[in-house]
Image 1 (cartoon, helix red, strand yellow):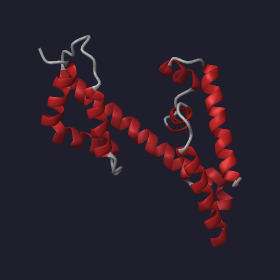
Image 2 (spheres, rainbow, N blue to C red):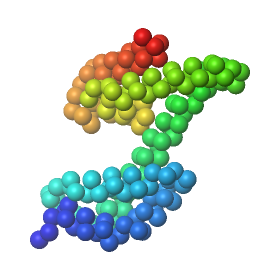
Image 3 (cartoon, helix red, strand yellow):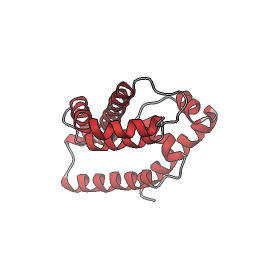
Length: 168
């Protein structure tokens, strides 16, 4: 009897074009459909054998839809975070000189670089909270840690990003 992971992987290979079209419909104009399909493949390969999946096709399509929805939410949150009015306020964003825009872009790049270099699990917790919108309690349950530990990681991430923003 084949394992859940093997069954899902074989099904993914056969159903890939249809899954890709479904993910593209969910994401609209977002170009991340291929990334979502790759994430589906990784998840499918990691599915355990207990219990045996009764309807692998339905499971695979639900997995693809859920991951596409998560990707879309994360992309939307990321875009909102990067918008000038979100970081500096709407009045400042519309009345900035070229020099101020260059400085703001430099500041943004420092913050993004600092965020990409956050240590694990701080980076993962920060992303779950700020980009995926999970509450601290949800993150704590998902990762099997205390809410206080989640709070400490988020606080550490925010301090490091504030330090990067200030240019120190």
